[in-house]
Length: 325
Image (cartoon, rainbow, N blue to C red; front, side, top):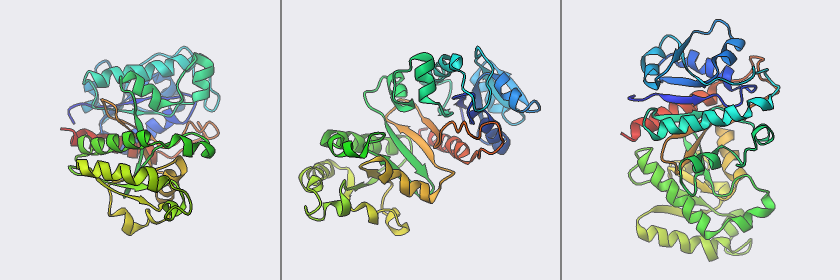
């Protein structure tokens, strides 16, 4: 790797800092990354963890073999596991902004973000975004970024995300579906090295509407759109009945599944690999991954948090860096 991965600390009272330690202990320089945050938060968790404070991200390429590299970002207050301090909220936001600036100037090859707590950021710093993805889209100067979840053997992209199920049919528009398909296809080409991505599109309704008996979205909106995009040269199939898309044989026929709503995408992925899923933001002018879990205040600092998802997120970021060369 010519540039390391920046791991943002996320909410310092959550499991992010302890998982950073565990991930470094597991990887030991195999994937060079550095922690962007307050080293005092790490030392409070493990006084014996070897840290290497750096001033240039490139130093992590060699130092990560023997110590966890840390690019210092001072927080105003200590972090107590499980008890968020609103006075640290602005620093969490500033760390993300700092990592994006490094990515956009080529000083890091990718960003891997530790989990944040949106309520803490909203109450402590007036955070005006629904989550990481929307904030990163603003910092990256792009109108729309989308979430892809990945595990070995499956990539899924929900078209609609964190909205009530009753609102999905309204939000699931032709324009949004087309945008999601185009961003996904381009990202698979540019950041995953897949020359001709194959996308399987799940229907909105049970049995993909069953010929109109259970809804006409698939007939009236989806099928014409997919026909139009295929005529442009994309490789799309569907609309498929979602209940037949995720068994082992079906998964061999596509590179990513485009799903209508959150649970349609995440239930199969988390069934296949509950602990090791990776969240990837597509459509940004830089690589961003993250573990597929939250701050887990209830177990923070207790040694119970598993690093599987963070390790997978770092590994995925490294693979994407190599694919973009």
